[in-house]
Image 1 (cartoon, one colour):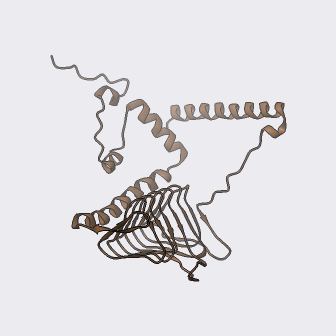
Image 2 (cartoon, helix red, strand yellow):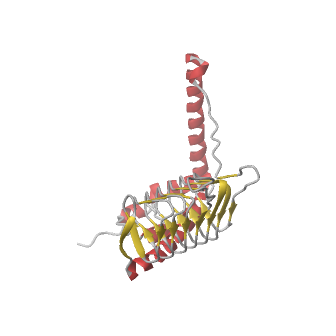
Image 3 (cartoon, rainbow, N blue to C red):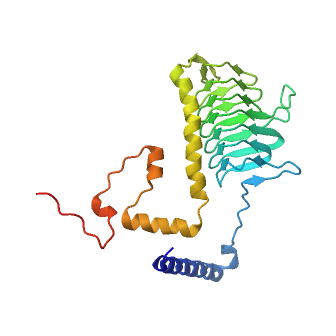
Length: 269
């Protein structure tokens, strides 16, 4: 960060500090009970007694996710924002290249009506859509679980099978290879096409690539993040890698991309 950037950042820092000090003073004038600072106790990785998460160094875990207890996350997998993987009463195993998307819940079964003790096992290159719930079930390699789907105890999803968005799969249901199941309760809808099977594999690859982008962004220091904000605001700059990842084509005027001291070329008559 240059001299000007550091100066601007420092001024902003002290303005915020002054605002917080004024807020604390006002709160105390109203009575000490009006102001209470709370410490967030969120931990991305948390032990439960002797059970500790094991996350591969090349996996991405979003800062707001929670991985608790006996959970294994394989190479190149991604656990997205707001997810909870709770391996307290049993174990959770996630293979390589798998993505568990935002706000999904993965838990285990210590006991149920059948008296079974069930871990949750998720294979390689699996896609689990946003807000899905997986409880004491098994999902084989290259399977697909849609958004907001629920898989109950003992469910077994075979390779290249798909659970449709919003489906409720009842206990001990087995979903065979190459089939799409959906509804509440879930039942066979149809067979998967070859294009859909290829999409499952591609979805896992897409998320593995996207996870690298988020991992790099989350690893940046605050100074770097603030400095990039200034650059983008002043010069209209965009990260080409970011746009390429999302296949975004931006229409930015030439004037917005030039520094203040460089004039645009004259327009043709």
